[in-house]
Amino acid sequence: MNKESNDEIAFKEDDILPYEKWLAAFRNGSSSEILEGHEFLRQFHATGFYEAYDIVASFAEKSQVEILWFLEKRECGHPYVNSNYPELESLCTYCNGFFSYRDSIPCPYSQCSSIFCSKICLQDHIALKHK
Image (cartoon, rainbow, N blue to C red; front, side):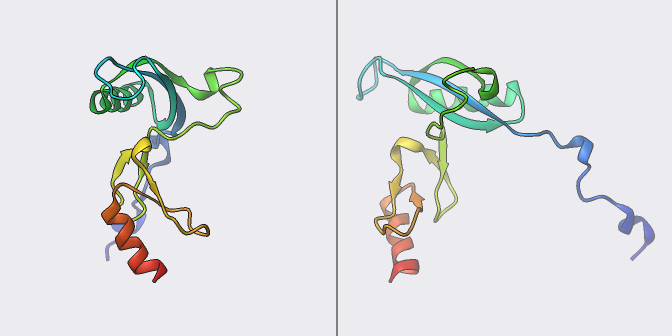
């Protein structure tokens, strides 16, 4: 090993951007099967405005909902700052894939807090962890 490889920093602290919690408000569109015009809030993490915009726009396109607004949670004021909201997208405990929060399937075992994107992932989880 040469000296140069020992002196390299794994992460440059000045280049790491902190993640901020954001809130986004949506409205179900006319093509939605669920409560046309229904408004809902979701929270998510992003490093800045442009990343937040990409996340919100992608979610709105996939879910066919209308974006009402999105803002850093700390800038929202009362009562938004002190409340928790469902995540914009969740991470499947079994396959590590992202999916819409409203499509989540919780583990039926009360001591387990895992959530899944499909019944297949749930069945595989139960077979490996609970049986």
